Image (cartoon, rainbow, N blue to C red; front, side):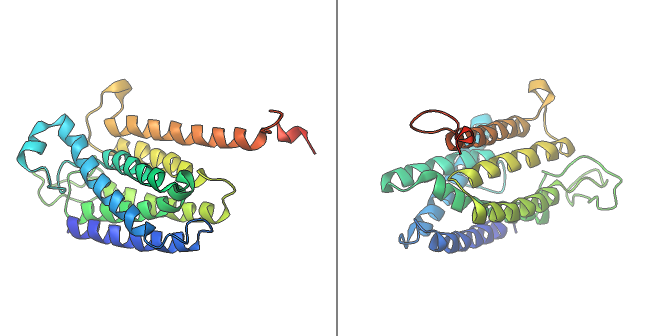
Amino acid sequence: MFRLCIFLGFLAGSLLLRHHIRRDAVLYSYQYLWIELTTATIVGGLIGARLWEALKESSIAIGNPFDITQGSAWYGGFLTSTMLVVFLLVGKRLPILRTLDVMVPSVCVGQVCGRIGCFLSGDTCFGLPTNLPWGVILPDSRFQIPVHPTPIYEALSYCGIFFMLLYILHRRKGAGIVFASYMLMVGIVRFVIEFWRVNPRSFFGLTEAQIISVCLMITGLTSFAIRIFARDTSPITGQSTALRT
């Protein structure tokens, strides 16, 4: 079930990416760009997620390095796929930030499907025990007690992020705004949901995912600050455009 959801996520995301590229004033003439970007995302996402876990646990790499149902980290996949996409765009001399803006709603679709796949397969990424009415019991758990369905929390959150990204994409006034919004919102969501998940805590009592989430949030906020500074500063005089009429 998990593999099926991952496949459906990539399929839906790639078709959405094709739609957005065709509507983009700069990218529309590149007919097969959506296929190349989808391929780079799939390869980078699957390999990067697997390598991230393999670096921490060598038995993953030695035992079954291609089993994506266990030991996969989304942030490893996000980092690797982003790097591959950037290399591809540099080689084609296409605008990097503009293309990333067009891509991230499709990434959100994939994340929604992936989290649903986790839930349906009874993955161990569920949360702490709860008495809330929507608590679920893991089918393979020795302790038959309800826990937080954190994959559903994430799936619903990514659905909300998806619609917000579409809104920003259709009204953006500068390249990189949508991608920065994605990093900020996904970082916030994962940081908060980690408080309901059972994961080891280390640095300042944070989990590994929370530390990565903080990095994403900082990167997103920094990108916003750079965009605002670049927009409000004259390239000739260096003076703020807010001071000029």
